[in-house]
Image 1 (cartoon, rainbow, N blue to C red):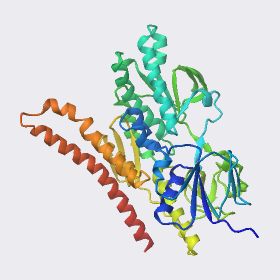
Image 2 (cartoon, rainbow, N blue to C red; image 1 turned 45 degrees about the horizontal axis):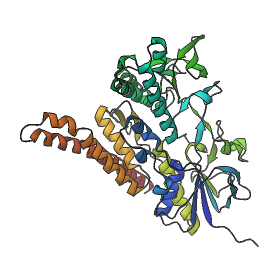
Image 3 (cartoon, helix red, strand yellow; image 1 turned 120 degrees about the horizontal axis):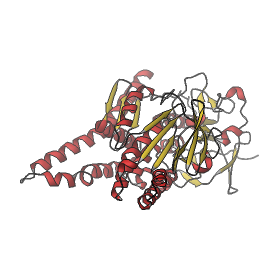
Image 4 (cartoon, rainbow, N blue to C red; image 1 turned 30 degrees about the vertical axis):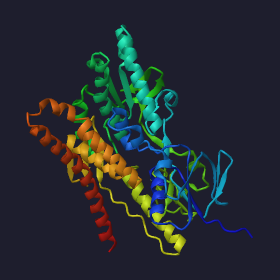
Length: 464
């Protein structure tokens, strides 16, 4: 008789998978934990824009799993998943290694969806991983440098035009960030920043349609016009083909071609192929093919398997947005229930409390919609947004490291030079300004922590 296997395998090192592993470590889970991801590094997607703008370093927004899981007891395996056998409780990797499990956590997320648009996968740049941010950064720098050396105005304009496909939150955040950033970069090369074009193509007539951020539509539209170069919004534009240096789209039944050397795709996601291949009946999936789960986040047909994040939806429940705040709350619930199973205790339904929404609308400019009651814009919104995300950095030691570096950069590197020129003889003005900046930055972090505490207290009150 084969001895039973008592180990938990987590597939996918995104927010759901990584947070689950770390929560299990913090809760002293009595079984071994294996985390599998094909990448070496964890991509903190909401802060990838900060890497592009230079507001944060690569190591801060794209840390290695080795660093994040240090001393956690979690075994990290860098490999791709080849097959998942739910009947035999076995996961096979492309390297040939296989793992049996007593419990499985599916945190594979979603993949970029190209909606059948010809050339999109080949020529458009997505923004999902750290590698994507790096590729976009390199492409933009190359185009700007070429444009500075080219005399032909038509070719130069093509090099200076960026087309962002998709008017959801990612597309808007990217367009606004680039509309502030690229003029600075190009002017530093000696170019005319007003030649830079950032065009946002949106299939719908409205941006953020059907999105959790829909209430911020007016604020986003205003911000798009207030950038260093205004974002050119083309609504009702359905992309039909992507070429190396142009986008074809239909507008009012007419075909239009937009010359652009940089094309960024943010127009949607698709269900992960491994999730599609699982032997789960159609009636236990949603219309997108995502897996239906119980309130305790277990598969209906395989209760030893947990799923959350982009690849799962609660049966009969309201669809939750695919955001970091949802993923880490679901991860905490999965970790709690896995420990409960190991100890023979009862499981608890996952409680997800949405705290509002955050959007980056340019360099040092964001909007924070707190509990759908209070909208904070501009620099104050920027501080709250960064403070909130820094609070969510998945490893406590790494969080303190990043928070310290951000505060240092925010206060001294970014502002001390300008303030030094204006200070009075006794230095009093500089001192006052530093105190203001310290206060603002600390408030950003403290407000984020207060929000987490408030939600935690609400959750406890709901349960009592």
